[in-house]
Image (cartoon, rainbow, N blue to C red):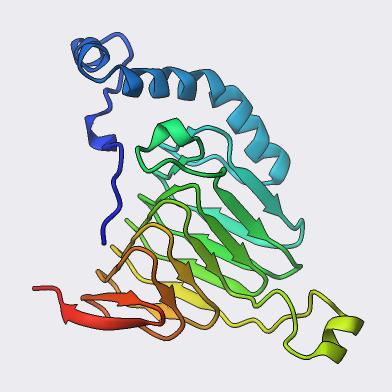
Length: 221
């Protein structure tokens, strides 16, 4: 029910420190990840600037994400974000880059500080609000839209006019790998969503929930 992260707290601040040398000897793949991240940093910052996303303090991007920001939407992210968009940057193997997409005028994506995601997607047509210190496991999807209408007639007239409803994810939520969080859902602070779950209804704070559809299994002490 948990996601395996390449522990960011063990990453040295300097590539030339004693800690960096020890990291290179003990876990050479982590050293390669850090070198690649630093080499991509200018391109990553340019990508964000072109998308109209202000670069935040302490951001770490392992591989380039995909940022699709409507010019009349709002996309704000706090300090300390970490996105892992390459298979080698997480032992679970991201199967694609991270995607942040605000698709319509007026769409709002707000993410707090300390956010982490591996190879996942956040798709917004109305509003998605994510608190601080939220971790989203590998290859998960958060979406506030059905994308397509349910009726045949509506699909024929407007194929992309699916229903939307805001999504709220509270502080300190952990979402396991391969999870779908669907429109209109609120996940309370501190809760854990088991891997492979489909969240179709609200989850209270401080619980473990899992399944399809996700149901509360127990509270967290």
